[in-house]
Image (cartoon, rainbow, N blue to C red; front, side):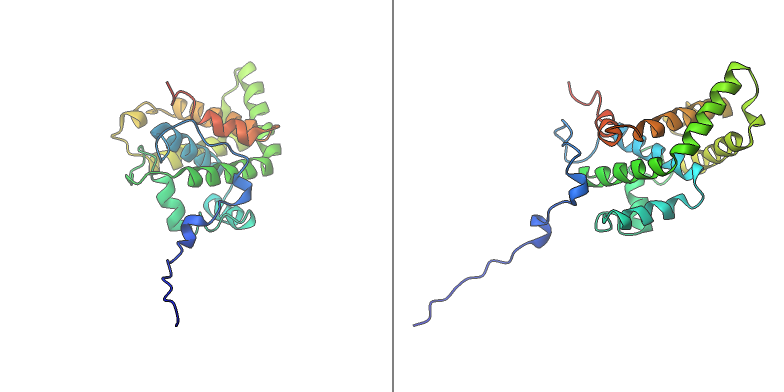
Length: 208
C-alpha cells in the first residue's frame, strides 16, 4: 500500500542568503525592519555626489551592481529609483521602506565607486583647501566648479523645494557646503574599513 506524502512547497526566496559581499556589514542596532529616515537621506545624498562627479552615474551604479553580483537586489534603473525615492526630501518620495539589505548594497556600491574616484576626490578637496586658505573664489577652479554646479543642479531638480529639509539649502553657498562635505565623506569611504565605518555612521543616534 502506498502511503500518501504531503509536499510542503519551499519558499526559495525566504531561504536565499544575502550576497556574501554584504555579510561583513553588521546588522544595525535598530528594531525597525526598514532603514530610518536619516539613513535613507544620507545614502541618497552620497549617491547624488557620485553622480555629480561621474557622467552617467546611475549607469555606473547599475554596472557595479552587476560586477559585485548584487543585481538580484538592484535589478534595474526603476528598482534603483524606487530605493532612492525612500529619501523623504525627494520630489517623488515613496513611502515604501528601504530594506536593510538594499541599504547595504547601495553602501557597498557607493564605496566601490568612491575608491575608483579616490584620485579625483583628493584633488578636489586639496583644491578646495588651497583656495579657501588663499580666499580665492571656488569658481576659479574648473573641475571643482564643475562638480559643485552639477551637484546643485541634481539636488534642485530632484528634491522637493517645499520640504523644510530642502529649504535649509536655499542658496548656492549652502549647497556648495553640502557638496564639499559629501566629498569628504566619500574620501572617508576609501580608507581602511571605510565601508564598515560609513555603514555604522548612517545609524548614529538611532538608538537611545
